[in-house]
View 1 (cartoon, helix red, strand yellow):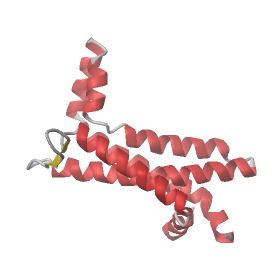
View 2 (cartoon, helix red, strand yellow):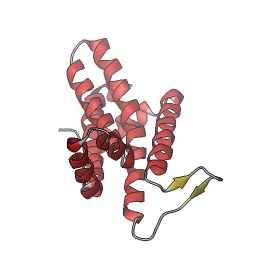
View 3 (cartoon, helix red, strand yellow):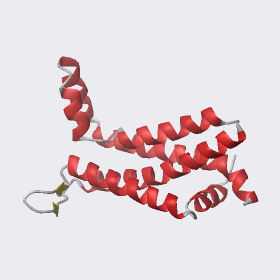
View 4 (cartoon, helix red, strand yellow):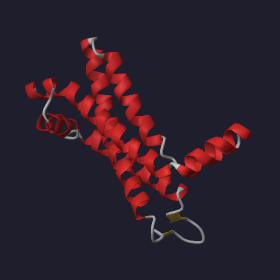
Length: 164
């Protein structure tokens, strides 16, 4: 089991490359704008405006956290997959961890998920009702999955980072 310091070192090594910083920042920004707009915290018409209603601060913070974590998980996952391909072992684990991390970030899509679910008829209405009721717990679960994915994926990189 790797220590958090070793995982932080692996993450720093990944983000020491400019292309991964740009990729992570781009993913975070795109996800943040999309989720904030879908959750009605960000508006584009008639002009760009943001608003966090009283009582929705937790949801806003959760969305920002999910966006930042997704921007961290994806570049670390890509690096892990590249290293696994090069060594020809651990490839399935790298893909699994990265896939879980990415899907966790996307699963908290709020109103987008509701719109998709409601287009499925009766089953969709039940799903939309579930998503509405458990929106905040699902976002917290997404954050937990992203953290586990980041830890697991960084842990696979940590031994390689000690040699670099």
